[in-house]
Length: 222
Image 1 (tube, one colour):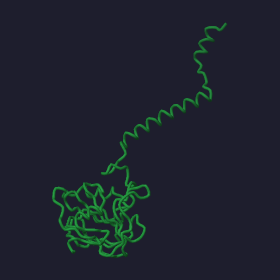
Image 2: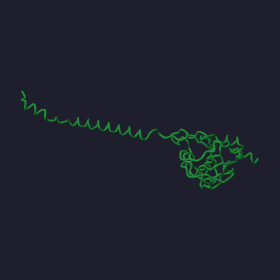
Image 3: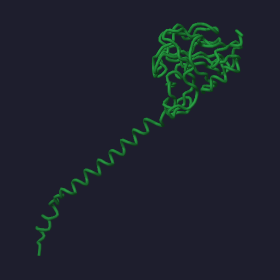
Image 4: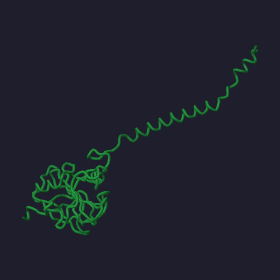
């Protein structure tokens, strides 16, 4: 039978943990810590950013990366309350219509492609203000013109820019030279029309304004 002294000695000794117990304790501590870090990171990052079109990224489009272009134009004063111009013309004189608006390879191609020789000048299709004239990711060298009434025209893949942001242009003023920059496969002009920040079918829009891109005709000159 243990004596009082032996019981006191027993209570004073620490039981040694087994290797398995130590392993489980370390693992539990690591899991709890990682959960705290993940929660803190999620709180700091917030929700995924989407662009003005409600898309996670510009990958929904084929030729374009809209995000940088949209950011560039948001800071400028809008002309949406002003009426769109009456005079509309072709952006190029000599070209081949090589690609249409619509789904392509599972993504929206939001404009038309007009094949033309490298260095061919292209012009503003109507009067307006240049809201973007710079390198713009998938667009390459890119020009955007705000025509008022919520209408913006977009010109992509230029080889050289000839206009400046903020300047007013008239229909027929040179904007840039046709090229093969950005996400492009061959020399061409990517042309699109946006209404209230959303791409629309440009051939129908231009026909309503007296321009038939497919037939290379303009009502103003016919």
